[in-house]
Length: 308
Image (cartoon, rainbow, N blue to C red):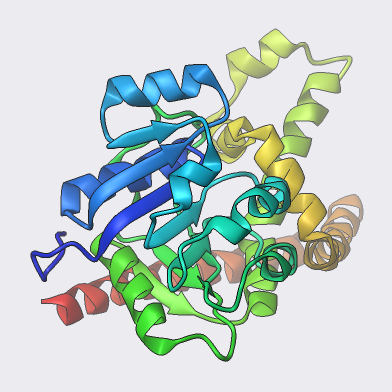
């Protein structure tokens, strides 16, 4: 996918945080011609040096203020828990009339952290490109990571529509489908579709490791595809996920409570050898998953047709 206008959407885009997503955004901007210049900021010398060698940014700074002062679009690509400290440094230095967005998996707490520290001249549109891998760091990014994935934006009710449409065009030009919803609804949806599954994956790895009668070498040696596939996400960035759970605790706890209730019912069915109940649940959930995948494929095809 390319920028259909053949003209950059922005003059300067500033990316704060050059990890997997930040570096992928920079690569996508360059590949699809979405900005004249891309500036990046990273805390450590090693990250900056790696990004410089890879060459997907025009300038890389060790000063966040310098990075954002001329930017028409600033994208915060740091762990959710770091947004407050970052915005307290750069908030008053953002270019008037520019767009500020982020890529975090939690939206409610991000809005509470950021909005008090920016002027009314800054158009803050929280965002969440739902894309990633279990890898991290500036060398892990790639432009195609966003292709046919969803990006959710949670603008305020008084958001300037032309700015919202510009950000939508940006993510669509990166290859994403874009949806708009409230921050509260986003956090509830992501709690069940992403946050709780990650929590379970981290936990089951810990459980397998702690078993006294099953050695770690046996877990590694005999792990079937189910264990490997399901626990792959437990390789994700621990700091990022720590911040996600702490900043979306209400929604996560609500979904986790419902999951535990359902798991307890399963436990009872197994204990009392209620095979009919187990089979009924497995058939039902298998069909639900099939319908979800079918609907997802239909949506992908429809979106592709609409873009032609």
